[in-house]
Amino acid sequence: MVKLYFLGLDKRSIYLKELYEEEIEKKKDKEEYIITDVLEEANVVILPIPFTKDRVHILGEGIEILPFIKKCTGKLVIGGALSAFTDEFKASNVECIDLMEQDSIALLNAIPTAEGAIAKAMEYTDIVLHKSNVLVLGFGRVGKILAHKLKGLDANVFCEARKKKDLAHANALGYNVVKLEELDNVLGNIDIIFSTIPKEILKEDYLKLLKKDAVIIDLASSPGSVDYMAARKYNIDAHLELGLPSKVAPKSAAIYLKEEIDSILEHRFNNTNSELGG
Image (tube, rainbow, N blue to C red):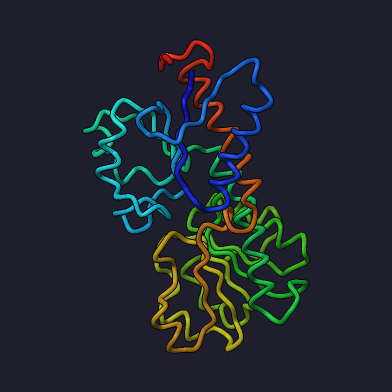
């Protein structure tokens, strides 16, 4: 029997727990999961994504991470952004799985991230995306999906990438391709920048080239890809938008997570023939 313990107060975490509660209610005659509110009773712990931002407390819970990890000895812990605490989990004999390192979740999360980024762009600008000049920095999972959706709205899409194959891919799809070292040639004409690069790319030298009414939607991991001090200096409208899946589409994001977690649990414990006992 798999006994689940949930943490997380964001909407995505709440929906995820509700999905399991609904499944348990439907399968009363074939119990596969039990949800417990007592950590000591659980053999699987589901943490929020990311599970921390300050590296001290579990996100939204006020629970200190290190004492919590020690209480999870012998349990399977599933969450997001766990890699920074790999050594601590190992030292406490805790098996941990980082959902954000699973390719399927990273790809599915890119969809609400891209849609959320477009929604934010519409919120922060007073122009339509149709025929506007938009720049997507980075051509990874999020960048590819975002560029595709922007093109579907008839925006004039510029894509930046470091790798030659990504530049060729973007070119083949009909986007305007830009090398990083050539950004200064196009920035003056860009209406909206979407950055997915987890590195401070948009520094002062680039920011001062932007139009006064340009908007930046920064999707990169904290602290983001913008020199925010310089952005304030030049009165650039820049927004760091993290965790968009849980903000703009928490139910869809929860469904994606449940599918992956179910797969993990089935692989680890074969559901009914669980090694966890109970």
